[in-house]
Amino acid sequence: MAYVVPANSPGPSVTVLRQKLADKLPDYMIPSHFVYLDHLPRAGNGKILRGQLTEQSPLEAPLDTSWLAPRTPLEKQIAGIWEEVLDLEHGELEDERGVGVQDNFFDLGGHSLRAIQVISRLRTTLSLEVPLRSLFDLPTLAEFAKEIERLAADTTLDSIDS
Image 1 (tube, rainbow, N blue to C red):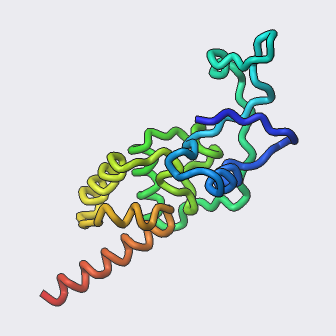
Image 2: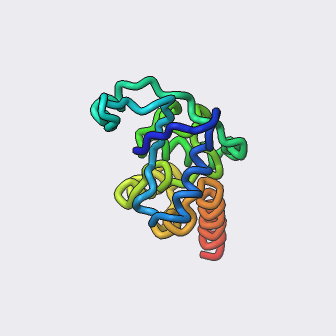
Image 3: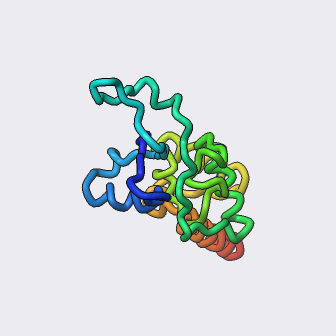
């Protein structure tokens, strides 16, 4: 988690912050959540009072105007699975609209164990074997959904050939 005090209102969106940090930091060091504050709590000597950070009233994060809602039933289903597996409430996301098609599973707090849970739920709900590697190679909702559509089409063709 990172606390952000923007110099100008409304400040950069979470997407912009992640892009800037990605230029300077390895992926594992980029925070999964950003909390916007109007100021950092400080002691008389100027040191940040870390224990009081969670007591601050967060500002609303600037919306990323490139956010797109899931468009297909499959994208909506995958978004729902991601929200469940990542234990996300809409208010914890970059904006309150939910997982968007350009959201990256790992930027939302996903990791290998949660990726396995997503694959398991997809296997159960879609009766489809989805390679775990697919989520790592195609981590945005739109890319991942497109791959699942491709796998489903291949599976259908294989069953016709049999």
